[in-house]
Image (cartoon, rainbow, N blue to C red; front, side, top):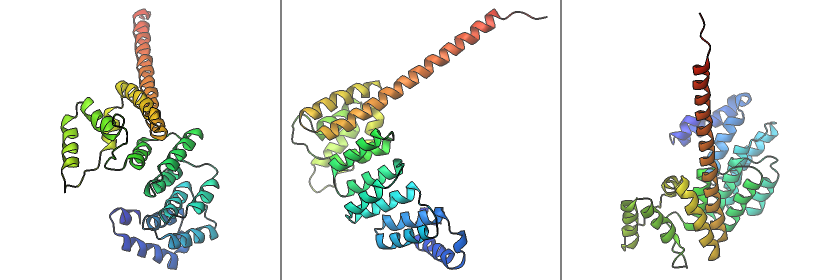
Length: 266
């Protein structure tokens, strides 16, 4: 089933699932239900997904967080917000799948502030955001193609397009600006992934700290919190690398010292 879904042979995957339900129900486990529910929720077939979900629970199969995350996203896609939070609040140990299901659904509904609150909650509960988390949050706040801000100094162009130029990616910045300014041309998606990668260093730590301060000064507290957290993550990562490098150097010194001071045998 997984292979069929990955190769977009959805009808065939559905036939396999239905065949197993009819002839080999005892072999139908969590992994098969998870795949089916995930596909249904992506297609907003929430009624069908809930039916499969109920069948799974009636058979005594406990839903994992990945399955619940699919249900959460599907409900948000259908704007069933109250029901979504009821399910989310009932999850004892939510993981990144659950939080991403919430953020992705809120991204679809353009609820930037609520998505950022989910981001704060996941950090509070010890679930560390990953690169994909930051990309989704930037998309919900700024759009996949970038939105013009109200402040002339602190906006999408000054931070992100200007950031590309500062990172030495002048050609990429120029192409994006040219297509944005030309009438009748579709504005390309801004590659937040590449942008964050360009500034995943010590320079980025300082840049994100400065940008987050400017964003807060003009009232963009959510966006400021997101970029500040990413900068802190980079700083922590760099310190770990430096610590790891220093540890390796000390070990090498100890090895050389032991080699020099070793007593000759024979």
